[in-house]
Image (cartoon, rainbow, N blue to C red; front, side):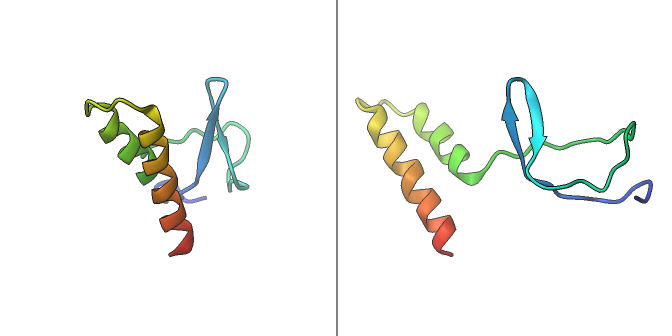
Length: 73
C-alpha cells in the first residue's frame, strides 16, 4: 500500500470495534487514519429523532423506506 493512498471501506461497529466488511490491503502493524461517515439511512433517522413524534415506528418506517430506495437504485 502506498503511504498516502485512499481505500474506502465499509465497516460495522460491534462491541466497541470497527470490523471491515471486506478484506483490507494492509499488513499487521500498519497504522491508518479513518474518517467516519454514517450511512444516509442513519442520517435520516438522526434528523427524525429531534422532531416531536409520538411514534418511534415512524422513525423506523422512514429508515426502511430510505434503505429500500438505496437498494433499488
